[in-house]
Length: 597
Figure 1 (cartoon, one colour):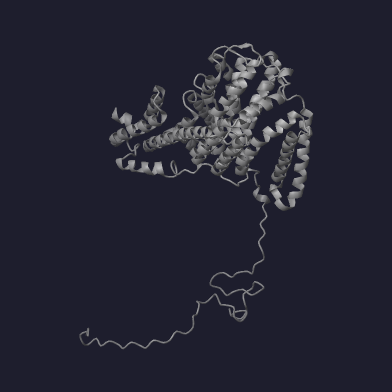
Figure 2 (cartoon, rainbow, N blue to C red):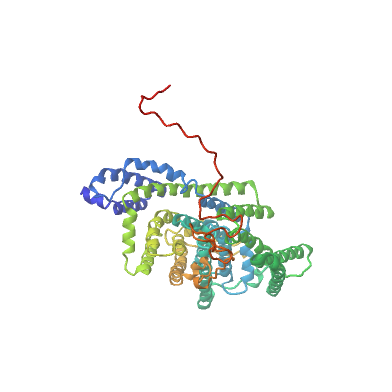
């Protein structure tokens, strides 16, 4: 029995961790307690393991280095998490989400499903600025859900759209889960962001495609806004003209700046065009010049600040100007400036943002410390070898491995949060993926798309809990129409999430089938045969130990003498001049005993 336990310590340890988590113990303490318990057991049964357990009491001395080394406390990559969290919470408190939803809702209002399109569009924008799922779901639940219910949207569809759009913060940079995945996989956060950008945008497009199909199949489930609700009036043509003018100014600035700034001229030209149209919209609004329609003014004034913040964060990272940590710091400062410009930067806002940031950062830190304790023991019982052999032996090679791993993560996402999956499961999967030759950035983005489902799974999805906390539980009177609005039941929220979970599963399949969506982060492939190396003309060098060559590359014909005065002869040892002769020492008289006087 002891031999069986000793030789199967890894699967027993992993199963015990799952049991601890299912019972309901906190994840960080379950990891640490499980690691220490099995460390003690492993040391005792090590003699019966046949060499499969490599644990000894002195190995515990490695824990302080694991805690305070580059993996946890001194990890610069993880420093981006509090910055992006703080930025997201400040932006959510600044009213940016409310302004965006109101303006984009007015823009898309005349068409069926317009509010749903607006929620998805704003969800993608909030994801690219905040990176925090809770902030996005709660903000859109508070603002959009009452409006959608007011104008007759199906409750299941409205709930599903809001919850799914909020989870876009999982995959669209600057996502917190992408930072953690990059750290656990040992890859660059910038590469992870670049790889996840296209899949995130494709997923957003599929959400909109689903709304389009539903607006055709069930048009009564998502009516257009009535005319009296369109307070900004008409003016789409004016907005199109403003966009064309912006494009013309950007192109002119690009042509002017191209000789000086080269590859960066397109970005600078676009920035010039955006600044000009933004200033023009503000002047038009303040002076009432009526150059633009009210709708065009509002869209430009509301959209450009968050887009500028996205460029400040992601643009500097993708251009290589800033690291993700530095980008997060600039984003946090930008969020404070935007809140101050709106007059909403109060002491309470800062206190709430700091408290929430501290809470989330401590949560991540404790899980990571527990994971380090667990991994120390798990690696000591060769658990990583067990997992690697288990996964690499799956039928189907690379494709079979990817399908099996995604099914495993999908099932575990019913019970575990994405942070827990990233710290517990990903370090076990990465070595097997690397051994099969799978690009780890592609693998990380694939897991990131899959982990989105952890927020949407009924009945444990956190996005569903966030929406449940702000959705109406009892009937209420609408303040605009005066009509009584029925509440949103928990069952409607759960059923509304199901189609979007299926869309996320489809997105996992698309990411596996079309890896180039992610592989764009590597840039264009270079064909080695097209590389032409040109070296400058240099005088030929003679091999060591031979006479130097003359100007024509041939050895001198005068027996190895230098070709010109002053040219050193490298075929001979160097001479440093004649040293002064030393007087000869007298020969010792060996016929007498030595004298030491």
